[in-house]
Length: 432
Ligand code: S3P
Image (tube, rainbow, N blue to C red; front, side):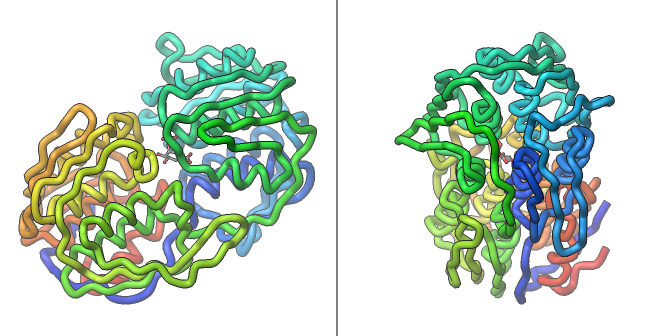
């Protein structure tokens, strides 16, 4: 439990947030698939990425943490060994879904499981296309939920139109496609994060994007790489909103990844009147990074819907905090996927921000918020065991008129172990 006192102390200073979680997972998994030694710099050390490292080690991959860098001795998927125990993915959907794409093509038996949250997240979205490719997969509750048991084997390419917008599903199918006997075409109606396409192409994979189609041609081997992971815009988002809503704030966040498939949050906040400047843009390892400068501003309501949703799906809880103090009525719709994350984030954010004083109404696929800059009064709230809910509530607490108590606040360790330290640093006066 953490207590945040009623202070509207401006956020001031300069920070660097943790490394991008999506890219960190992928750097370990893709390096394991290469032949030879890859080096990863600025890797995210957090619970989710630790789960990925452990699972890859169980498959026989040598991963060494050398402090400044991580080295991975890739064996190619043909070099993976049958795991003698369950591959435990913890809270990490990315670990489980991407690994399923690899294990579907490996000629052995494997079982993937996770914590109670992950074991209640839908896996049919990955199982269905992998079975069409020829994999033999069984899972709990009529092949819906983990644990997932896979007897891998020869895969054939398929043409697959994705029924939902999901980078995890797309990446899983790309990985399966690389290990198939024929080409795979994935049609993505709405664009999702494209880190897998970029990183694997740099390693020599044949992945062509033609409009909404992604065509994957099997390859014999991938080349090892040197990865430098950018800062995570999904982590930066908490501080971008915090500095926007706490009067008198001005902060700089250095080296944040600004891949366009991830910057929906910046577009929406700018549309709401946020004072955000992007400076020092450079390309590092195929990804654009920049410094983000944020000063407080009076925000106005907005509606978020349609194709931008996958480009800010992880930022919707913190966006709700911004909307709660923005002038006017804001809406988020077309975001039913938010119910299928680490927790049902629609119910979680509506319940907890409601307890703190926000005027928020739950919809099947989103929420409606009637903004009021003084709405947050403080209260006892809970994180629902969800890292992004905990961090969103912390930002709401910064502009509350009363004390806020957040239970299970340590859950931020899943994606952003430095969160509390950086929040204390920028806001100066918060005490535990
Ligand atoms: C991720 C994709 C998104 C996102 C998750 C990370 C990834 O999930 O919510 O935090 O690394 O590919 P979906 O693909 O399920 O939308």
